[in-house]
Amino acid sequence: MAISNQKMFDEGLKIRREVLGAEYVDPQIKTTDEFALAIQHMVTEYCWGMGWSRPGLDRKTRSMLNLAILTALGKPHELKAHVRGAIRNGVTKDEIREVLIHATVYCGIPAGVDAFRNAREALAEIEAKK
Image (cartoon, rainbow, N blue to C red; front, side, top):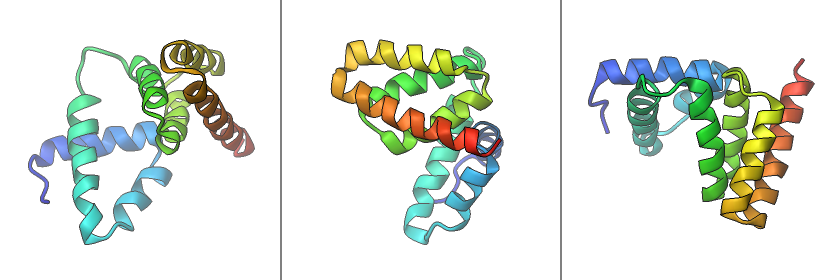
């Protein structure tokens, strides 16, 4: 799958690197094979270029929404990445906890327990790098 909108892809890659960190993003793109390259292009262009570049919400709000949505979807790997991104976007540990508690009320205890477990791991990794 080719990049359909180079400008949107470039903007998406810039934002993706700023939020998740180049050390996380670049290996995903550089080490992917031909089969999976299509999803990397789609994620970068559509999600980051189209979704995250819109002016209606700031990055902190988008990060908090992502944490709640990923909790609801039960996506632990993505949740960990977005916890790191949330911290970069100015979300505090207390705010992350409150988002996860609120999501647990609506998503269920198993989803919340899993989200807290994965968020704690991501936060511990951040602390270990300091």
